[in-house]
Image (cartoon, one colour):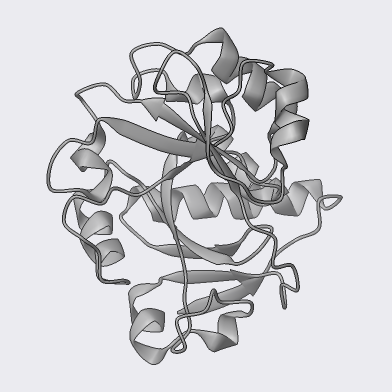
Length: 218
């Protein structure tokens, strides 16, 4: 794994240069490690059969488990879902970028089933708070991701925590130093007509309910 230092958001020329270079690598099937709000993740082009094969070797997965997506905008999911509802658009505009995962009803033509053996009925997506990653997805479109874990099965807070085996599978690590946040994502399902909180995290239900009054909280 080759490592580079992530540019700051103010280094716009550098951000663009690294983003273009990273997109080229992703399109060739490379697996990239990059930081989001609460951990380091691995990202890959969901349309790349070669990249996906390397990507799936990172963690043991249940066969029918699919990978979530990073997007730059909810409209990037056109082609992945049959339709984007006004509720989904409202949630995305209110809480993206941020720690909100939204579950959408998927269509039948997902690239490589997003890593699953069978076509999943739903998909999960969010836009994280990482300027470089958002430029990459703006250029590239949706990317599948998985949280990187250290040998103690804890999310990686620094690239130095990666195991030698995982380092061999990652072409490039974009280092943002140590991540100290342990905040968790909130997951809201919009698969049914009425949206529902599946997992409450850093974005509390009451805050979401202010935006979507019909939200169901168990």
